[in-house]
Length: 212
Image (tube, rainbow, N blue to C red):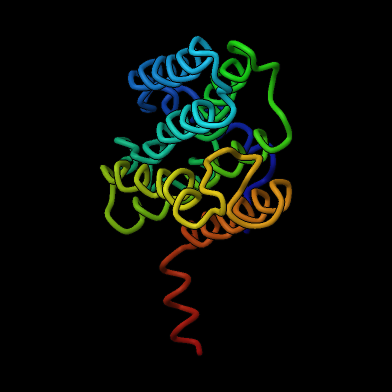
């Protein structure tokens, strides 16, 4: 039976503090600094940061989210009645706004005048890809698999567009297939599906398999 809304609200409030403490905040300023430096350097060289520097900065920031589900307190909280998706949703609600703020600031460096539609779509897709990769890796290998998830994000955001794109480009305005406002939402929707599957209860899956 689902918990009442008031109970979930209370549980969420109690989870905010321990969730915030166990997020790896120390590495975020490093990645924000690298992302800012990449965009600023390209702008200083009179280039267009939107073509290469900003996509690289976006990937750097999203790589931090690949470690979001490496929760040192997971074993202590796993036996409690709060569902895993709910606990992770709290972590996402804390971490994603911080990454979004840093990314938004990067879109105003140098000649950039704020995010465009393709930039926003690619950023949103990469955020979901990072969360989906993190969930899959933790489910398969346990805590400590953030590097594998980060490699998946780099492949999806940087390597794949260069390998199959015509012309090769990591500019979000020129995706490998179709138009940016159709390609990136499709990629994001696929990542959402993977994220949802990664949070299915294995015990329930085994029960359904036996019933069949």
